[in-house]
Image (cartoon, rainbow, N blue to C red; front, side):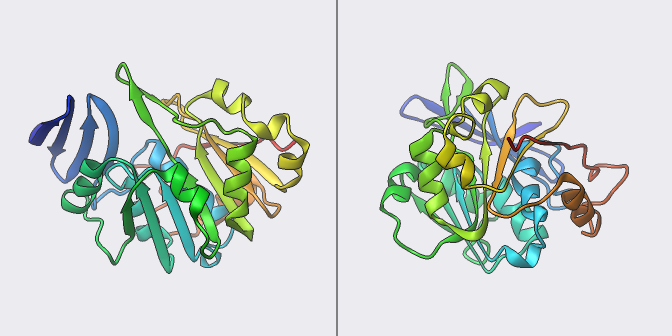
Length: 250
């Protein structure tokens, strides 16, 4: 891929790379975002963050909050396939916010972007609840992506307070080890808050995405709903989905 834009600021290097219509964002060598308007399916973690919306009928997903925007890959996916009435994106890095707008096409019609600390934003938020909250918060240490906050009782409880009675929380847990440390597995109050919990993964990725639903659902329901969406039901080609779905409700 060719580097079409780069910037170094306060010891951090940002690059935009392109190949054809595919745009990628790298920050200090860490791959943060990808988007191709001709082939929106990324075959990466952003597919996993968007797909849980289809555990329910997509018409129920009216307000979406994304914590950790990067270049805005998941915002574009949700806009393309779900088209909620409102999306809000929270991004700590102002350069990422600029890149999302300039190179990834995240305009006001798609989402409202706020450049601020997502954890503090959630702690002070007093507005209407969301149908879907996506937690994709990441930093970098030695070129590796790391979560800045654990999926502990306090954080999951906070996210839970800001979703609707039929809402869902989607969290990029990085890997299986991080998922197993989630408060859902050792806190009865958190466990009782959710009717269904799933693990989503893609064979070639280490990332594990956890999905916490306030209403009962099933892997079968997700696959049926996906199959009914044009562009998501491909059996071959660049838009083919290869997602593993496991029910981890205990």
